[in-house]
Length: 517
Image 1 (cartoon, one colour):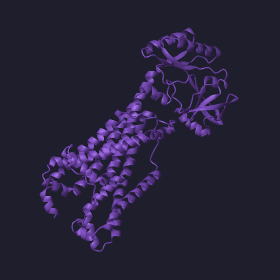
Image 2 (cartoon, one colour):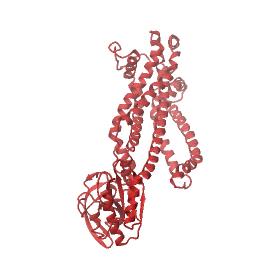
Image 3 (cartoon, helix red, strand yellow):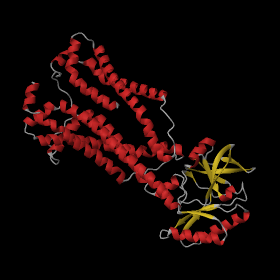
């Protein structure tokens, strides 16, 4: 918004330059002229703000109901005026400051220069010149574009920054989509059971039933189709006098548990891990002791690692089965998760598991969790893909709008230069390609700027976004497939769109030179 205002003001000043000079000659002070221009910008912002405010009152409730319909959350009600008004006032402050900084040149208007139709006095200006004779290898339009950008780089600086920011945003969100293609890793990261089959003991929780279920787990491990079996159960208990969730994990491996962010996984019965959220909440770090109370027993555990989990928004810890049995000696797992070998058929294994349960007189609930998790995460992947497409469209719209404003401004400023080049024999096609390639070079410079930012800040940005879910560190793997589409789209769009706008060059010729004299 601020960049758009900056370009609009710059364009209007060029159109109104003569008028401002004449008004100054008639006795209007430059301070009053500056105030009038700022007031004009503020009025336009106010008109747009009021229109947007009324539009939000009519559209936000219906959009909220539509967006939340599938989540089971009902849209509560209206819009709070206080944060809306504060947001508008904050935006208005930035708009007025931007307008003031952009309009300061009004105080430097020369009355004589304005009466001469805005022509500056003849003087020598220092520029960075690039010799066209020495650049023989590229085509003529590309050589002209290199010279043009090197001479006028400060005018393109804002577009370079905008392109860099858009490339950074598009690469980051593409990397998020790429990282969610591995369903199993995504499930583990977001706290779901990365398993093929889930089994729960629904029999009466007697001692005999628990023993039979442990025997059942041991027999299930021997099935040829089973790759591994593990159990994870959660209990709410007291940690340092705070009610916290504790995960009791039978085994820690890459298939059901991500590597700790710091330290290692628990090996002994007096060790545990905390998430960064729970670590900060309890004020405990690696090497500290945590007092855990449950069922009238109180034990102390050594924090050996820091991990991340979305369970209970990250307010959770974990330990091994032997560690939890110090608090509850008779604890036995009542559920387990099966990971199958690649060539195993899920339906066939489910039938064998049910038959094995019947042999031990157990009532089991057996679910095909692979299908459930795949369906759930595919919906999430489609949502992220829709977000990627929407974000790409938004970025293209913003880039297109700023390119349009900058192109119109530059074409006005360079009309005499284009007329001279046409009189020297340069074809209209070469001049239009030169203009388009200039924006292509700007897109490439913005790409370099954006990719550097993406490498430095993408993981930090996602860590900040997902921190409320308990994921403090998100590793976004930036690949060629997440980099090439944004770069090709932005650079290609800049070249094509600016070439389309440059049709105005057809009007610039010897006649333009005669009008300027």
